[in-house]
Length: 143
Length: 143
DNA sequence: TTCACACCCTGAAGTTACTATAGAGTCAAG
DNA sequence: CTTGACTCTATAGTAACTTCAGGGTGTGAA
Image (cartoon, rainbow over all chains, first blue to last red; front, side):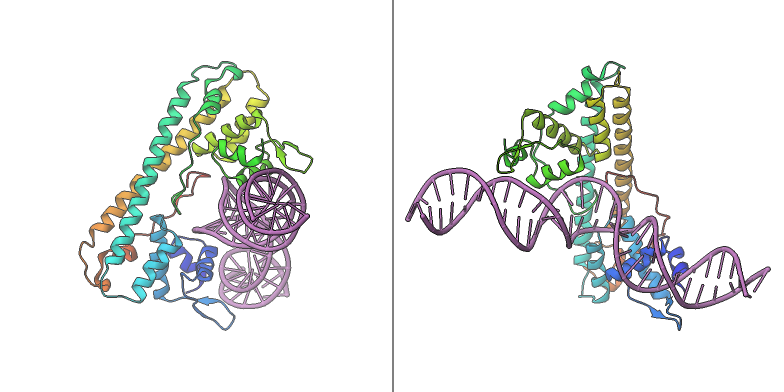
């Protein structure tokens, strides 16, 4: 199986496959006589795994950790549970942040309902006078 | 006012201030005899504005657009309203995406409640066998 | 006066997870 | 034998910064 076919079954681009190989997420496959990458079903499985993790917004670091757990099973899957739990917590935090954000934006939007002059626009005034909060550090992922 | 003081009142790093200047968001200030940047209250206002927009997760492009509207008031603030409305819509979409994500993660987490062996772990099995969905394109911002 | 130390300067590179581009080789069909 | 789709490598670009290297400036204390 060549790279284009693999990319298609895993729903990603050819460039992404090569990128994962360079990143060490996907093992380098055998090559044909003419230097084309040649994949087997184990690559399909692993690439699917990676893409599914990415669809759940896990970082490459998290995926690396999970792949390591698969490759070197250390007895039990407590580590897997912990990783997923932490990831869910990250998602929760981000949802809460965005909800608060949306509320702020709605309040801001309330300040200008009409097509009045820009120099009197309540939105622009609001953006200048908003309290500047200390920016809490962002998490590694989820924007 | 030197750059460190400005950064402090606007709750950002000195490097970020210099970066905004390079990006054209913050006008280049006068310099002292020894080439230190020297800021006035107009810079404080504009940097606060920028940081507040960023706190609302606006992109630099959006902030540029708002700053242009401030600098060259074109009559009414319909454009401001539209920009904010579109931004709220983006936030809404992202919240919906993350909520769905969280649900998927919770379902996944259900598959392994115990400290069983990794090779039987339902989470890892789930991550391998999940349907690989075509990845919808991401928005410019909001992670 | 000289030392330490905090602050400032520039320019370049690193971050994340890719995407895009350039320039070249390979393969199957017509 | 040529056309077009596919593959290869290497490099650069994306967003919004952060970090680093290598230097200059300002001030209080020894």
